[in-house]
Length: 294
Length: 137
Image 1 (cartoon, rainbow over the protein chains, first blue to last red):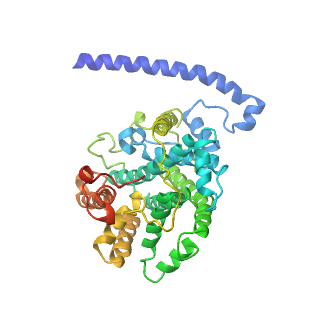
Image 2: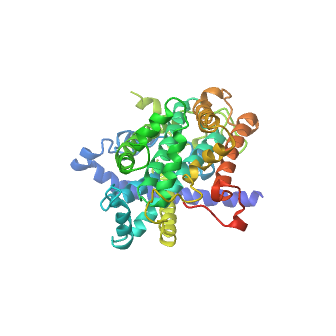
Image 3: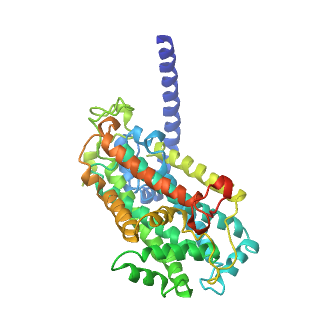
């Protein structure tokens, strides 16, 4: 047992020595580039010698601005989040990319919509493939967002000070459902037409505002050309802007809240080191954060 | 965050994209015949994530099934962090919260599964291994 521990310690020392050497060599080239006139104009914090410099680099980097400067190691382990938030975001990116491609070949009118989809599948380069990516990403995103919410709940990660980010997250779930539902109608086949007929009929059951909501969505008494146009505009303009805006807010809150010690002093059964002040190797970057709060 | 989180996110993104690309290469998105106002398919089903609601509508008055139950569900979900004042993250300290969420998730999952796979013509109860599937994604 002690021999094994000794070997492990030795391997760890070698590994850290290799990592340090690699960082130094990479650091020196990158550092020289950042030190040039052009480099200084791009990177506001050119030297990255101490953890404090690296934190300053994160604060001032546009590309890294949504990331927290500091996170606990256990928060980036797979078992903490199952990476469902990242996966949802990747799926949203895939949906935007494939959706833009499909928009080039689609006109939202009952006369042409179905033929456009057939054209996408048969004539357009990679059309069927891109349509598949869009469809399966959409279904997966509903699952991923719901699973992300369940994971956050079971982890207790919605607790103070992150309550409001949970509320934003519920908003994102509802927006995801609306995105998926409005997109459902666009192929204008039997599946789309009757699924949306059934779905909007359910909206009609809401008292007082139900029938008005249903008529606003449909643009008439039944699913027709007005409905197709409304769903299209919601699907490609209104809802994407809404979902991306709320998502940016959600990520910004994540950046801010990640740096707060939400559960120090609350050791969890799967994480015996979490109690008390974090150990030196527990935190990914350990800058003197107070120095950067303006 | 470099390299720890960014490398993890990059690998997660690549894995996710690879899965999508392979799946989309193997399975085509469905496209049925042109929409026809005069020909109602039997059964007519909403998209799968609304099938729980559609299932509820067969059991209760529309007011209860379409408004009260889902409305309460969303309302409680939004308020969850303000209702749950327990500061602990330990599962053993949160038995009530965890049970409640599990019941909530199971409730909707079971309804969606019944609506998807166990409802056939006329939205009557069927067994998928006897009568076949009445489900399109």
